[in-house]
Amino acid sequence: MTNENAVTLPEYARNPFIAKLPSLKAQKAMYKDLLAEPLFDERECEYPPHLRKHCIARLAKCFLPQARQVELADRFALLLRQGYLGRDPLTHNYLRHLHNGIERIEGKSLEAKVSQPVKNTASSFALLGCPGVGKTLAVNRVLDQYPQTIQHDTPFSLIQIVWLRLEAPALGSLKQLCLDFFQSIDTLIATDYVKRYAIGTSVEQMLVHMAHVAHLHALGVLVIDEIQHLRGAKIGAEPLMKFLVKLVNTIGVPVVPIGTLGALPILQGSFSQARRSTGLGSLLWDRMEPGSAWNQFLGKLWKYQWTYPRTDMTDELNAAIYDESQGVADLAVKLFMLAQLRLVGISEMRKGMSELLTPALIRTVAKEEFAMVAPMIQALRTNDPQDLKRYDDLRSLSDHIGVVLGRALNGYAPETTAASPPAFPDAAPAASHASIDVLLLSSLTSLGVAEDVARQLVREALAKEPSADPLMLMGRMAATLAASPPKLKRSKAKPSSTPELPRDDLRRLVQAGRENGQSAYQALLEAGVVRPPMLDFAA
Image (tube, rainbow, N blue to C red):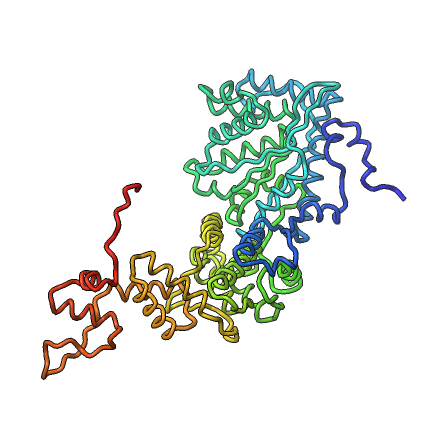
């Protein structure tokens, strides 16, 4: 039987720029290469919470390819190799491209007439889609399958740059694009192109040199991410898009623009760019709809649980996760990760609590942690195209997730409020208060509260709200110490007497102090409830 990895095509085998690329692969092999599964062992579910939180954090790097990501890898393999066919260094084509580049430099324009036209084999495709569907991550995973540079020593000496990824300049500046291009190459292969071609040079000359450098290093594919940034360009997107069209149509370097659906008018702005963008068929990625693709994705994700006991998938859970993520893979993964972190963090404070994932928990975590993208999620729910155009960036959420992740890994449990009570399973077994007693008592005494008073505060707090979150209890106990006592009705017969309160109630001390002209703090200090603050000379 023929080894499929050993087979190559003759036009690829004799072209040095293609021959040193990784072998062509079937789609099953591509899927395995793209897959980034987090480390997982079922025995880790029995680890203590402080270790399991770090296990859950592995989901941040998880990538579970779908059919469209495999299709992207397939098209990129074709785009890259086809672009090199017209620049074979063992034929006159590559030398003609270099000669044309020199003529353009001498003419100081990309429009300069060249004496040796070359047949162009480069093509292009655009990748557009809803934010969070994995465009950038998928492209990065595809690019990772290829070396970025290849050193050639025989029969010629040069450093081949297989791919280069840039972000579209926010102001649509051609100068900034050239600077980013030269800086990226200087960093990659230790050249000095910024110094040589970007300082004291006109934009038109920079573009000419950029095209020539792309040929000099046999650039395989130029990826331009965040192309929707050009919508806000002061000079409009047209000059930059015309240059990208020139790279593909005339210079022969494939270009792949990537962006949200808001970039569609930019790419359709000129007929030539629209034609090139569909050279291999444009890819439009929308969020997943409820159905087989979503169920398959969620089923793969669901096995990575570090909560105990393990939660089985139900229709209600499936529906809750879909509703709160609207089928956006990035949101679904983050929501699944944050829900587990929430349960394990609370479990660390409340020994013996069940860690079952519930629809209520999913919705509570989404409400609290996805607040900054709530308008976008609502726009997805209503599927309003006009609203969706306004929400095309999830990077702020990614930054927020980093903060939440860091907070969880450093041992800070989520704070709950009366408006958003902790979403625990109602059937969770009652936990012993032994560990909570110690935690709260230690926290109070470290703040200077006398131990006997601290014990009484903890007893009262747990008696009133035995299932409340420890951080919430701490806040309420601190308020009891610092706040003024509530207004109490006085007896008409004894207007100046201290109201009848339990002997061990702190309000009795505070009220008596008030009648003597003391503040609440002074009264508690004099009674020995709190200690005077210690000066920290090391601060």
